[in-house]
Amino acid sequence: MKRTTIVIADDHGMVVDGLRGLLEPEYEVVGVVSDGRAVLPEVRRLKPDLAIIDISMPSLNGLDCARQLRDAGCSAKVLILTMHADATLAREALGAGASGYILKSSPASELRNALKEVLRGHTYLSPAVTKDLLDVMGRATSARDDAWARLTQRQREVLQLLAEGKSHKEVAAILNISIKTAEYHKYAILHALGLKTTADLVQYAVRHGIIAVSRIGDSGVLPV
Image (cartoon, rainbow, N blue to C red; front, top):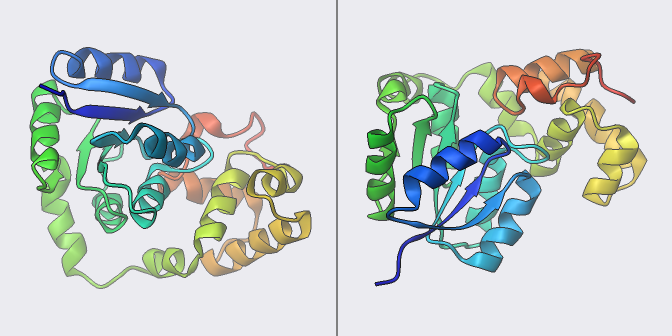
């Protein structure tokens, strides 16, 4: 019998090794991705049944990875595995096309249950965020959500790369745009989010799970 195939997208080696140990007795891990921008091409190439994706991925966060997979029509189910017990992020993950949201602090038995539910076509949410999610979905959209929703996909990409410490020149090269366009996006992002400095932008990205603290440059200030 053909085993269910899985791609893991996480840049922490110990997490990947731990997942392999849990999964491989029952599932086949066909690929591992450590950079968010590699998720879509790798899933297209390997055609797994499921992708387990961390939110705080370098270059492109896990939520935007999920959006890319959904928009590209990929059939792989998506399970977000994250350290963020944040109901707002969970809601955004589901809106981006993910079928599940589970915490890295969850026991192995919960991960196994989540995989089974997602592969059956159901939605799975970690109990740690479920009760808060009902409140989040029931109340009016926050000012942060309004501002974030106004950003385009390209602006979200620029925001993450800048928050990771990339210069305008590096952002332009990665996204195949001009330096002037990268600079324009930066200032449009600052205006849309009500931020004033690049340090504010970094803090915003960390606070909302777009990047991990470990990816901020030594100075904590972005190059320009």
